Image 1 (cartoon, rainbow, N blue to C red):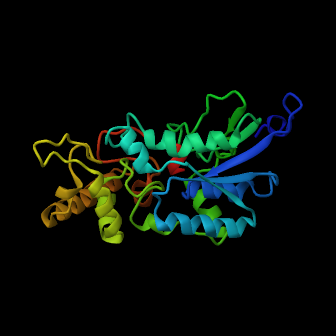
Image 2 (image 1 turned 180 degrees about the vertical axis):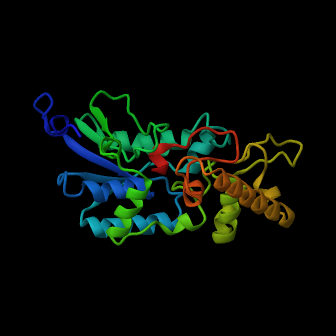
Image 3 (image 1 turned 90 degrees about the vertical axis):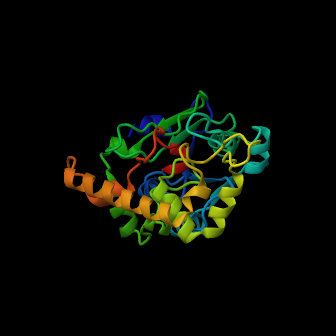
Length: 281
């Protein structure tokens, strides 16, 4: 890490050091990792208002470990407001207006015009990820895990050594973010149905699946509506397909990738691109 970049005053102004937490394992581990290295660190959480309860619980758990305040950032307009503004078009991999309006906008408003070093928890074994990179000239983005060769197993060790462990949602979900995130695998939608049926039903109400002739089709998954996913025969099929895919990947044993890594990694069973890193680190 380039300490000169971190500690220097720019244009005579004090540099702020900020780490945005998502409620995921990587940003949480980075907060633990940087605790003694940058004592003046500010921790923030951009709350969309649509997070899982487990995410809120883990942020509180992390806050207690850090013994530091976490600035709770929230848009003055909620998801439903922006959904109406975008004429009912659900966010997807190409637009991602949810990330832009509910995460990035509040974060950049919090930063303002101050000179900021923004710490991002992308790991050394994730060369394909870029993370949140602002176009604002007053923000410098750094990647301590990449610079110090910190990998997945190190992240898990950091969290376990701190007594934090992984967030509970990792038992059935591969990433943090809104409960209705369109980057979820279908097996994760089934996980939502089984673990939070009330949230699944809420997500289903946002969809226009084309079942009525007047409806334009807007669904969270490009190829299938949530309503169709609730059919018992479809649930069984999705579970079998996921188990088969796990088996194939495990048998392939790509490099040093383990089955547990496959489950937790950022791939989907659709054609979408890499997930939003400000939400899912």
